[in-house]
Image (tube, rainbow, N blue to C red; front, side):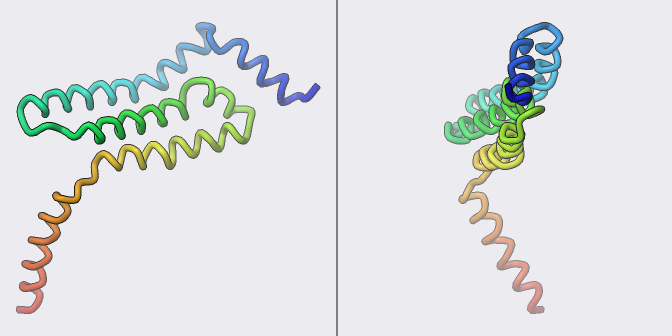
Length: 128
């Protein structure tokens, strides 16, 4: 019997006990609170200002879910003993979560308006 499989089996059997569930909830709590605050801010923004694009909310939700998956849950438990799961945790937390969260914040119209107007003024001031 492979020792690695034995460790994974033992750790997986105790995942839903109170000893293992409370730390998992505590690790996921900041991400869940951030997600709830973001959704509330979107609702308030939709009522008071122009509508927030749906794709930004979906990207943010996926980014937070990737972060939660990497620090809490079965992948995080398996990452303690399995190198492949550990690297998937790095992939989710270090690459997919920031890409998904960053995709919701990019806006071409903002970049065109700010960079276009400031760059002309800065260039004219530099000539003088």
